[in-house]
View: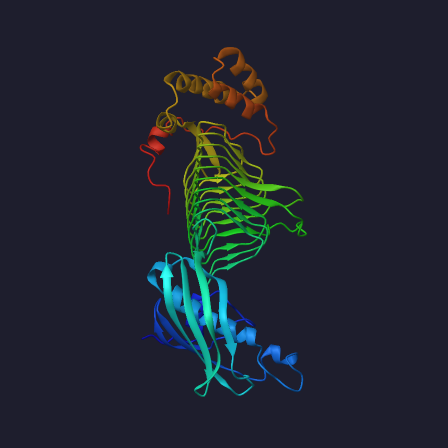
Length: 426
């Protein structure tokens, strides 16, 4: 036998004021039988109109209270985890006695048969041992989230949210309006997905993450933008990803990224795919991070800075200027230290590409040439491999911050700074 107060009942059933119609469960055999009580008072909202001067509890609400007792009984069974109860029919209902303010209703329900997800129960309501109502109730057990997902009873999900298959939403998480959550995405406890967020498939969002909060931009006036997050991302504890500033703009995250604890991705940022962002990294607005880049823990990146594909930013660096693809940058302020040879090798780039990238490095940094002149020299002197074309495109694109300079100390090569690319997290 189990006794449940109202707080425990509200953890099991989705009903809330003014439509939760039982106060306490006083007996419970999970999946078989339950007894509940309700204290009827003149403060019930339905008495205002049913009937003025002659308050009588509507019979349909007595039936609903019997049904809610049955919902608790059904959902407390182990096999009903992640389910909700839908009533398929009510038969043989009879009302024997009016219920008025001051009465205490006792509801008793008992399962009469159960086949798979379908069942039937007999329920009755009485006052002071005198029968007020009884009937037979047919019900079905359905997935609480379409497609077999699970939403914790304490989570708050706006009715406009579009939820894919096998989605899980953890305890005390809030999901606001106009949010889309893709198939197989798991959202942990105490997250806040504010609004205008689209999450792709197979993402794992750990506890305390905030997505879609207003940007930290004094020019923002509430205009609609979007946070777009792709597929297969891992977003660890307490990461913040903000809405963009400007109507119709986006803060965009690609696919297969690993974003570590407390990282901040603010308004209008563009993050590519297969990116690793270390713990406590602070990006500024309009930052762009290319595919397969690595940003070491505690690094700070200035607004409008671009970090190219397969670049690596050392831990605790202060990045003020653009980092071309395939380079390593480190320091405060950060400077180019060499080619990301280890990253190139680990990502499977060809030996030919690695050799051409090193030649490009010499053209960019071993002369006083401007980025525009360096790009022309690279196109003349190097083979047009895809990696070289990416590097040229980066140099030729307009830069608001300029290109990072090379460190003055020649001995500070990537082999000395990052002999084996150790852990980036904090």
